[in-house]
Length: 522
Image (cartoon, rainbow, N blue to C red; front, top):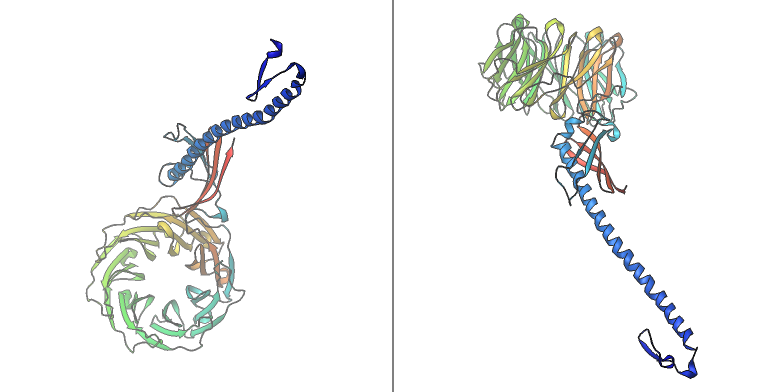
């Protein structure tokens, strides 16, 4: 019945009366419009939220999977196999994460990249000289460099008319050398050969040397922390009638020892006292002949406690080692602990340093004047290995007067006079057990044509300094950089589904630092 039709609009019951026919339509349309305005956006928003919630959850799962993949790549570089697969900058490798994360198997790509600041493998030599200075305009024979204080350094050498000189100059932590020398002093004007310098205490330094008749002297003088030199000798001791190529080492406190070739070239060690004020005892404390035949160019190193090892060229130019005991008060045990011929071949100008524990490295000029480095076991008690552990011929032409320094991680740098009298340098890696890597890490010609008797020291970090007799025999100091911390950089890309994480890391001597981490939808 038309007049009795009942309608429900928004839950409200309406009765259309005959007298209201046609007036209900506007109300109906208005109510429908309200429903459309309120309900439709609500449903649309609900649908969007449902879809967004699903997408966000999926992205989270992908992000977590990529994050795990990057962490796995870092582990694989430092402790797994990926690091060995990327030996050079630009090399790359890819693999899948071995275990699924959130049901996903991310793809991983690792690329070796340039390290910020140009870092590299320990032993990498920068192929340009940082700075240089001619510190002496005459002949500067057998120079040796030593740090004084802060940026101040000193070089001792045989100069004009064979006088003994000490010169100071500055070297900054960045390798920049002062534009001019600070000071110079002739500590002996009556002939000086093979001078060696050592710090005594405060501003006091000592020099040992032989004169033109090989008489052995020790002298002390003062170098102030600003590099100025007090122009007078504090004290002098004639410690030996004959002292060829002497080397000095501190034993304990004010006690010092000197090893040298004595009368008829026998090997001798002598101890004497030098006070903190530079006053030298009136006589030697003790002395002992450790080789009754021959001893040339000896080098000495502390083993442990009171035991010392001496490497030298002995009878028949062979490689000899002797171990001795020197007490803290300078008293020397009358008999050697052990003496051994380790190398039955040329063994000139040996330089000995500790590798690790009881393993030592010795750089020397060997057969055919080639450059060699060998390793040897010497126990703390002074027992010498029967033979070298390993040997590397680092220069097959020439290796005169090698000067060696230890870098980080078993790496050693050796400066020497090579072919055509060039000043050359190599870096080598030696394991703690004495095994020497057969491949040089790096090499450099730092002076072409004239670089005699180099002396190499570390300034700071990657900066090293060399003094040598250079072109026209003048005295030169140069600085250069050798990487002394193992810096490697990698770019890691991990991708899972539509998510990608790109990370860049730097590893410095085993310590990982993340420098960037970016998440991208792809």
